[in-house]
Length: 245
Image 1 (cartoon, rainbow, N blue to C red):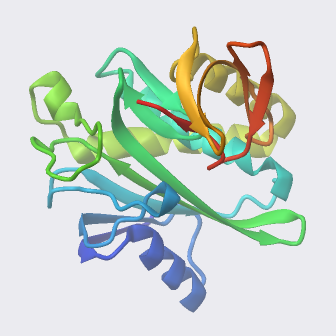
Image 2: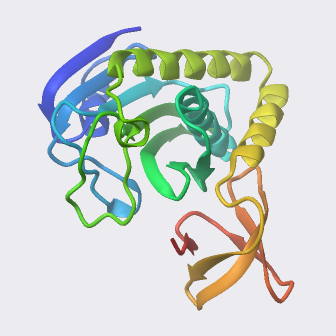
């Protein structure tokens, strides 16, 4: 494992992507930063993180054994690696589709995965993670952030947590490379069991407005299948539907 440690950068994903464009970067090269000036989140959002408090890192993989249509399996693997690492500290950790990590009704981790395709295969994957570890207060207008320290009332070793996440990620990745169909099926089952609000009806909104629905399943390509309270099935790609929190 090759680590690059930065005191400050605009975004670990941007830094690692630029490095990959300049030179051959070994798989599992991991960039960590004490502070990001422009941390990237999903939907173009920024990521609030106090200097030196949290885990901000990006890792590069070259999963050329995966077809482009199998991109979502990487999202499942990353989310589960983080969720299952946090299970050692917390109860009620879940994955909010597609890959936010929640504890109860509050967000503790965001993930941004950027894939570069080579023909019909995934040539390069940069995984960016922002995990709230030791931050004591959040000042942005984000609706529901929380940190491990806030939830456990104690400080945690960020390096030990990073090592655990990367170990889980490596184990799962090796299984995926060795026997893709079996490993992908296992990831899909674990992901389904870990889903946020997987039981009962909850509020969502799409282009037509708010509605009540229950989770039916997440398809292999990442499509989110809901059934609303009138019995209608609704299928969504990423960004087409949002939870109402």
